[in-house]
Length: 298
Image (cartoon, rainbow, N blue to C red; front, side, top):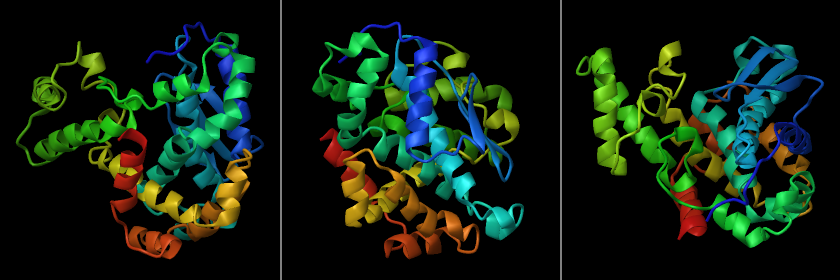
């Protein structure tokens, strides 16, 4: 399925995205949203958290899910103990936990039916071309599963293949088996093996991410860890009746409160596995993640 044709004006996207970010609890008195080529979140101080996203006039959901993802990071940063800023007790415990926060808000909240039952009428107000585009058709568009050249535009069903590709190349680079100069060719070969076709150019291939250029070798695996942890945390949060009930009314503060008390407040005082066990009652497991993928895509 395809989305109702654009254009979706950038100004309308910015207004809608800010409304959604505020509704999930992002504090605009301690942060902001700006425009970039590749979405990211950065913290400049205990009350200065910057989110960025990119805009496509052909698809308003691209910038929205960028904002939801980065707002998940931002909410974690804003929820850490402010008085301990710069100390372990006031710092995020790991990238795998950090990515769990972004993937939770992006996928478990933002791509859910319950979210769009509340927000789709509002989106239609911002984007009139959606007026004749039924919610069910829109959800089929959101839940489509198809191969993409670009990691950040991949659906949940195929996203981890992008991580598998990068993780394999990273291991070969770190071990000395793969020279940096040979990465483009190795990328294209591995991509073809996993996806069945090669990217059109290096911009859509090995140069699409910022991570390696900033020395972030080994980072990509944290996205899959984040997927696993986010599903386990979201399942645990939904066992609290007030959390699920509130989300049906577009009230996300009980969920945020649960994350504040179960994840954010601990900073780095618990290691990641202990934090997940403390929050969910079980050590990290793929069970909830696999159940989530099956329920949405099968």
